[in-house]
Image (cartoon, rainbow, N blue to C red):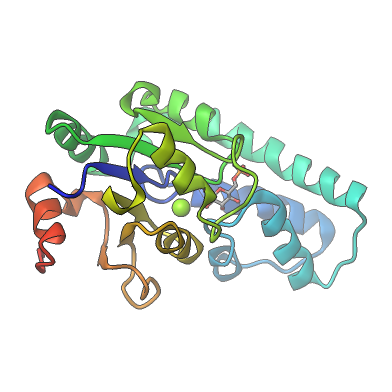
Length: 222
Ligand code: BG6
Ligand code: MG
């Protein structure tokens, strides 16, 4: 197979943490008197912590200096960490584990490529820290998606050329990052939103090795 590695975004692909990000941002926006909806939260998917805060302050039309921004982001992260520290393996999205185990058994390499600086804690809480050959996350990469950095770093860590990697991503910014890295990309979510992906599925429960091979041959596999 030309595909020799799969790189997975974490939030929204392997675990459903968007709800915790939303609840934590909601607490902050309530304190700041900003009207923040679940629809607004969609704009934060795949976006780094500070860039998310900038979007929220823009929605609320609030000016803040660097110290205040740092304090707001820290406050939000403490609530978020409270939520994710209670996560359990039950919160792994359906089909993720079996697909990753199947491709690993077939000799493919697997890595995480996530903007989140909480990646190690989430992997540990849901019990999958040992499932990946490499983890590239917001702690080691400075430029956020759609910059390709995080995926290029992941590919380098597993010693794989970008054109041999497939990225699984649920965020528009993440799909752009994968394409900017010169990788193939399968979107997780709605085809209307993730238009730029090479193919879109609703979740990893729709994937298996046979379908990955069909994707490589450019066949419709669903
Ligand atoms: C991404 C999420 O994976 O990580 C974003 O989709 C989040 O919503 C970003 O803002 C950064 O996460 P963290 O955990 O470092 O605040
Ligand atoms: Mg995501």
